[in-house]
Length: 229
View 1 (cartoon, rainbow, N blue to C red):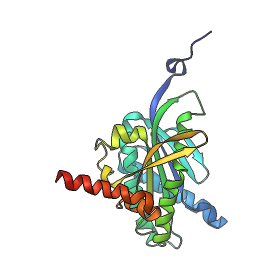
View 2: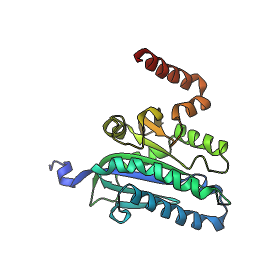
View 3: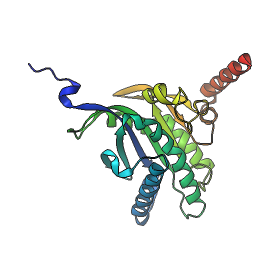
View 4: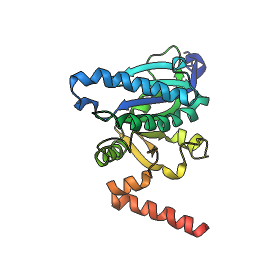
């Protein structure tokens, strides 16, 4: 019996990102293609802004109105910073557009084999992007900011990205103190993840959505700060 190993599969750790247009299913048919084309342009500009060449992405996959891409694992910090630039570009665009456009972004890291088309790492990325609490937070700001000039994009990162990159202050444009922990649970996935809404306090947003859960977390954080002052 042959032993199957990561070496046999030629699997290497990759940093992966997924982008999805919020609420595109509610757009009229004549707007679908223009929205997708415009989002792809803004995502490419965001990649360029963090020093990643869009054409060098690996395992590219279209997902309806969005996309999933992979880069070498050392690019995970840059992928986390994509949301900062995408948020800025979308908010700027929305000031002059008839229909606002926002995006959800997910970042994860895991093994992927170059000779495979179907990857567990992409499945996990999809579970993160569809996390109900993350979508609730994004939806809250879409309702609070109907013109889309204050909120353009939100991000969720996996526990591995949080522990290894974001929490140790490895991403200048994603301050840990502005992120909030959530639980992601589906029939085939259960783990912690962290959400980031550029320019906003993610914990404060969760407090608005569920005061009974989120307010104590914010209080504990303030208490720790005051104790160490």
